[in-house]
Image 1: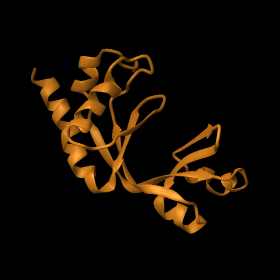
Image 2: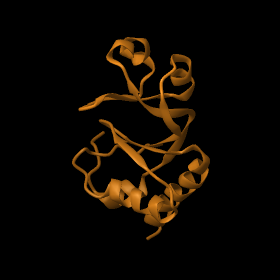
Image 3: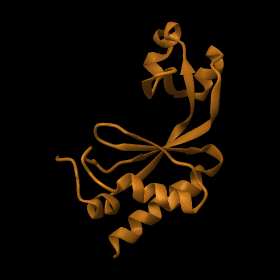
Image 4: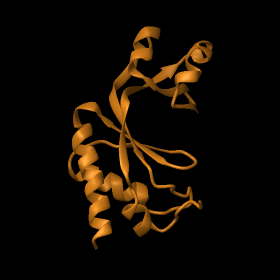
Length: 136
C-alpha cells in the first residue's frame, strides 16, 4: 500500500482513533533515557535537552516534571510525509473549537495530542472532517 498524498483522499479516509493511554510531554535527563525508552512514544533532541512523550503514569513514577495530560488520536490513513495540507486542515478545525493540537508525523500515520479534557470533542470534530469530505 502506498502512502497517500492527495488531501481530499486523506480527509475522506482520516479514520481518527483515540488511544487509551494518557500522555505527557516532558524533559528527560540523558541519564534517565534508558529507563523509559521502551515506553516513549517520541523522543526529540532540542537545544535545551531531550523532550519526550511518555505515559503520564510513567512520568509520575520517575518524578519527571511534565505538562498536562494529553490523549493521542491516531489518524489511521496512511499519509505521505510529502502530503500538503493535512496538518493545516485538522489544526484549523480544532483551533476553531479552541482545542490545542500537538501533531506528530510518523512514517505512516499522523498522531494528534489534545488536552485530555477536550479529547472526546476533538475526536468528534476529526470524525466530522472525514464525514464532510466523504459526502462533498
